Image 1 (cartoon, rainbow, N blue to C red):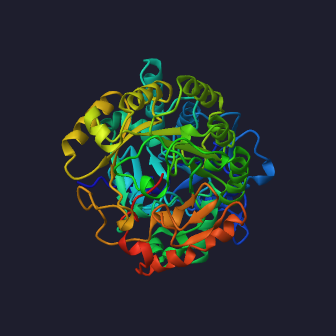
Image 2 (cartoon, rainbow, N blue to C red; image 1 turned 135 degrees about the horizontal axis):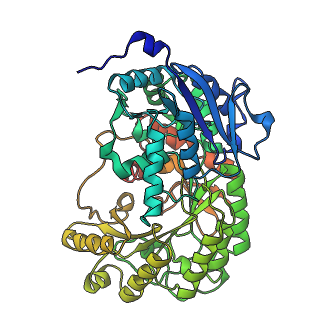
Length: 538
C-alpha cells in the first residue's frame, strides 16, 4: 500500500547533495569537457537541479586549488579521506535533513529527471537507501534516509573493532561502490528501493565519470552525440557503437619466448617454438625497451592494465623483477601476471609482497585494482590429470599457488580450462581452491578461431553478437614489438604495426575499420570463426 507524503511536507523538504571528490579526483575532472565546462562544474550544476535541494557539499582534499572549484558549494576539506572519514562526514551532513543525495563529483551526466523518479520511489516507500540499477554508472546518485549514513558508520566501525574483515579497510582508497559494500554486510536490515532502467545497459560496462583520459574522451563523444539525460542512452549507444572504442585499457605483452611446458590445450607449442633453453637476448624483451614502452602507454592511454604473460613464461626472463617493479612504480598502471607457477622463487615473492605493501594506497587507474594480481594456470586438481594437460611441474605449481595465497590474499587467482569430459575434475578443483581462500577462474576453452580443435564444454555465447571487447579495449604486443589484430590472430593475418618503431595512436587507429565492421554486424577474416568476442579482460 502506498505511503504518500503530505504535499506541504514534500515542498518544505531539506535534501542536501554530497559530491565526493576526496580520492582525489582525476585531473580530467577539471579539464574542459563540454562547451568549455568541466565534469566537476557540470556535476555541481546538475546536482543543484535535484528535487528539494538545499545545499551542495563538495568533499575534497586539502591540496586542491581553490580556483578549480565551482562557486556556491559548501567545501569540506580533509587531508585524507578514508571510508570511515567519509561516513562520519556524511552522517554529520545528514543530521536534521529529510534525505541526502550522494554521488561522485566527476559525474557530469547526473540526471535530475531520473533522480526525481528515484526520490518519488524513496519517499513513497519510506526507503532507507535507494539506487538506480541497469543504467551506466554516473547517471544517478544514491539516496539515503537521514539516519542511514550513521547506521553504515556503526556497521563499519563495529566490524573493524571486532577484528572482523571490513569490506574496505579504513586506510584504503574509497571505491565508487563503497556505501553499498558496507550496506551489504547487513543488507536485510535495510529497506531498499531500486529504480530499474527500462533497457538494461550494464552489458556496455560504461563508467560515465571523468576519472581517466579514456572516460573523458568517451564522455566528450557521447555528449557531442546528444547524450544529456539517461533516457537517451539506449538509442545513442545502439546507433553509435563506434563511439565506445576510445583508448586501449588492457595491454597484453609478451616478454619471454621460452616456456617450461607444452600444454595440450595451448596453441603456443604449435607456432611459437617455446622450447628451452633460451638461445640468447632475442628471446626476451629488454628491460629498457619495456620501460620505455610503459612510458608511452601512460602517455597514450593515461592508465591501463599490463599483462606480461602473452605466450612464454614471464618467470624465465632474466630481469623479471626489474620488469615487475617498472610497472609497479607507475601508479597509473596495474599489473597482472599469468603464470604456470614454475620458475619462481620464494624470495622473489617475498620481495614483491614487501614492495606492494610499501606502495601508497590509491586507486590505480579508474577502478579499484590491486597493484599486482596473479593468475596461476593449473588446469587440474590431480597430478595425473595435470600431467595429461600440462606435463611435469604439478607439485611446484601448486606449492607456488600456496605461497601466493599467503603473500597476496585477495589478489591470487587459480585458473582451469573447462573442456568436454572434465566436469568432475573441475568440481574438485573449484572446491579445493575455494577452501584454500583462492579466487577461482573456470575459463572457457578458446580454440583460436579454428587453429585448435573445438573442445568447449558448452556454447555460452550471447544470443545477439556484439562488437568484440578485445578490439574495443586490448592491444597485443609480441616480443619483437609486432602488434597483431588481437591475441587470436596467431598467424598474424592483420599486423597493425610495431610499437618500437611507430606511434601507438597510429597503430591503434588501424583496427578501427575492423571494429566498425563489427558495429555493422559484419565479421571478416578470423573474426568470422571466433567465439572470444564476448570475453572481457578486466
